[in-house]
Length: 77
Length: 419
Image 1 (cartoon, one colour):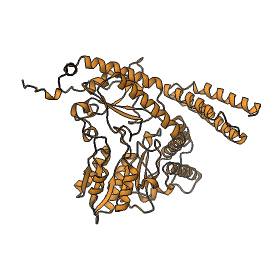
Image 2: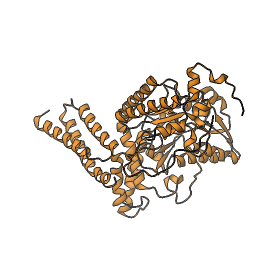
Image 3: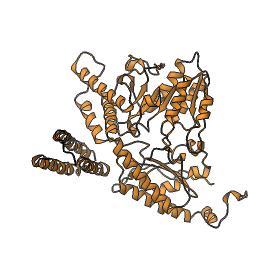
Image 4: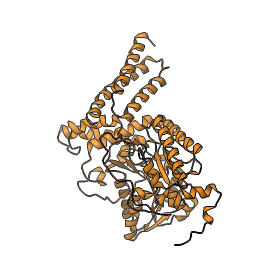
């Protein structure tokens, strides 16, 4: 994988974990952390740049989702 | 066996009291954050009625509803036109059973179901019986599975419908739906299945299973409460008499405005379940094995109710001999669990499902259902197992019956004297 893409993926991973830690609910928090980690691990060996890009876009959408969902979770706790 | 009155009192949690661990995934499931994310726009900004044909509010709402319909259909291998949104699996079950039986009532007056079905199915059959239909309640074997030969033998020329649930909500047993479907097809009987606990957890295909009607529940698959669906086969066409009359929505079978946010939630839940099925299945099986191994390796005389192989791993129903169920639930009060006995519901009768599989009455009173789901963690499972082991051992120490068993006395041979 090209270095630029690799660092992009790693930074996406870090940001997703950081945001996931903000869920007040134990179950949601642990699920988000675990699922993000397992998804990145499972796709770690992917080489095809188009597949990688598609997953990166999906990851960015999921990151936005986590950010959005932490708000009602915190507010309604 | 002496009866206790209800000791688990309903109460609001104290200020600092921690909420219990949730281990009751068969009762209901928390919504997946991704489902709520899909629903929110339709609760806030896109609030149109999907049946309004004349403006953008209606069009966008309808488009969301149709997307959701397709997501539900894809999960079960159906066509979107075969999915009807309802208020839940209870309504779907009522529609299917009463609707089909009443539609074909001039020629066919017999309906078959099993003794382990959900209350709504059994109650619908009871209503049909009072309308003059004849109902057969098939018994199940000791492992919870129906006897296929008995099933085939009970089909009569005037049978219109057979209803069997795919996965039982109390003991987790999986029925042989393919074989049952084969039998029903060959005899020209419609097959309805309550798949509320099965959809999204095991692969389901309505064509493979030869199922004609299927009930789906939103809040069992990490979706919202208050929505469900009914799959009604179009080829060969299944006709039903609608339960709810009105403006003719949902192909005339279920009138009423379809709640777009809830339907979108159900669709999102189905689509997520399809993506996550393999991952969830592996994880839930691993956690269930962990729980059962831990408990059975430290405690003797623990019986798992229901077949050990033909089951959904996430529903574990264990009976702890020589321990009273309600005392065990009280002792496990920081874990949210359900008892197989109806001590936690209105009557003192043990669960009819456990009775149908032939569980002894005292074992039926000592059974607990552990529900494991997508959000369960290893730590929760370990804590539950340890708590269970400690509390069961403690309760057994206090039990005179246990003392007698340890001394080698056969409890069944005791003659209890009257005072």
